[in-house]
Image (cartoon, rainbow, N blue to C red; front, side, top):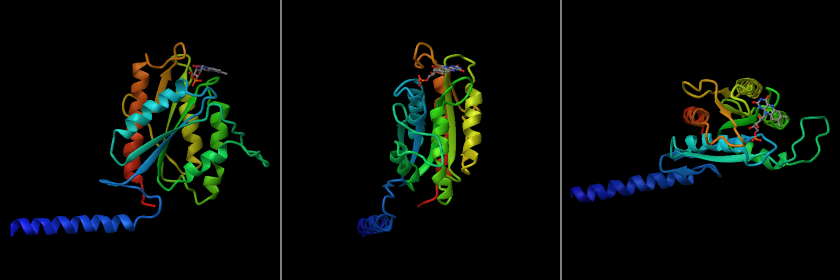
Length: 225
Ligand SMILES: Cc1cc2nc3c(=O)[nH]c(=O)nc-3n(C[C@H](O)[C@H](O)[C@H](O)COP(=O)(O)O)c2cc1C
């Protein structure tokens, strides 16, 4: 009898989950723990796959390890053609990126730039400017966390200035700026020596702390589509 009740309960529980799954909005993936959310990492160096991309990948790996609901994707802008905003924007590679930013599963962003003259790269600025349609389109990025990281050729090469510039700009989209955890309070700050960040353990740790924090805040803020 006891066994029968248990089996019936299991059946009802399974049926309940199935009913929930069929009621999900199209595209809303379900994990055993709830709806999946995606964190996108944007690597804004013109050099594809180099230190900025590696740094943001470290942040994404840490974000993914926070919870089974988190999925991550690196968008490496290196080699892509993305013009800054103008009244007549030419057709370029941003068209491929825009749908990923409009995805209802988007839980947060980690934007990464090399430090160029103590400032964000022009590619990073162009990316930020081209997010304008997301602002016009019901403030689609609003209330989602954004973290930033920067890689410089010098230990003190303006990384923190770059992070501030990115986070300040993303406030215009209503995003919620998120830093790392102590001691990486502002975000990820990495030092490239000989085109390599793998030796900069404290820099990589700042990227991981950032990824973890963005993921935690994304889980708290994520609204079901
Ligand atoms: C135009 C230019 C300006 C740079 N300015 C700085 C700088 O102000 N501070 C710094 O630390 N590194 C500077 N660097 C070095 C880059 O930030 C560093 O090499 C970075 O890791 C490049 O990222 P990537 O490997 O993803 O291309 C500069 C590099 C270039 C090409």
